[in-house]
Image 1 (cartoon, rainbow, N blue to C red):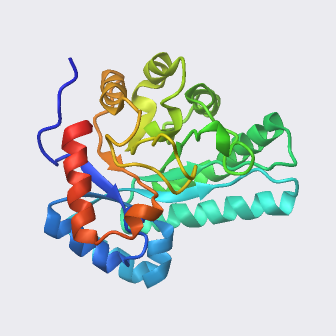
Image 2: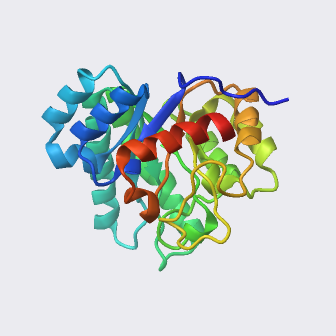
Image 3: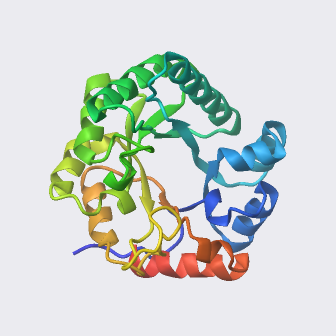
Amino acid sequence: MVERLTDYSRLAIHSMCFKFLNLFQIVELFQKEGVPGITVWREHIHDIGLKESRKVLNDSGLKVVSLCRGGFFPSAGAGERERACVETMKAIDEAHEIGAPLVVLVCGAEPRLPLQEARQHILDGIQKVLPHAKSAQVCLGVEPLHPMYADNRSAINTMEQANNVVSALHSEWVGIVLDVYHVWWEACLQSEIMRAGRKIMAFHVSDWKTPTEHILTDRGLMGEGCINIRQIRAWAEQAGFRGFIEVEVFSEKYWKEEPGYYIQRIKEAYLRCV
């Protein structure tokens, strides 16, 4: 029997759920609505600057769960690969400054490269930035993305592949970001979650709508689609995960909603379906 969530003590919401608000407005909204955790997207930091972002977050009382995102390591050109590493190290520095313990890695892909070569670039890239992450005391979370993103967003598309990367790197500073939207379909999901164990550093929730109108910007609120979110949460918790549950909804529909109404919808869906 999977226990229901009865309060909001583990709720975190990604700032990108409110794409068109600035960080000041998002923080104020979360405080008003009793949302304890926030995952910050770099776009919202860059919009107001790192100094102001650090101040507003430090003064907010919110727990900064993670920073999105670094990665995009594969490229046919060595210069592009180097720039991706430099940019990821900047993300690590930003995470350190705002008190985020984790940088989420969208690992990247390159349609001109074979997938195996792209995966090697990912491994090489993480190895290159890992000393910087360790120095900053910031973890790196490898997030497997749905295979429909394998051409240009991520060549890491299953929990098995993410587990293999983490095993190869063998570092306490590298783990897995488990996003139900990307992995719900996997035949061996339960066993791979158990294999990951306490290497699961983050847990993201949204829902897969049927039919989906856009693979990137038509995610549903929890309960609007076909993902058994509560079951996947139970597996993650059996594997040892005890962290925040992060709502990450990219939606052209919900981005247009009045923020106060939308956050109420998020909170209701969280208790009902997660």
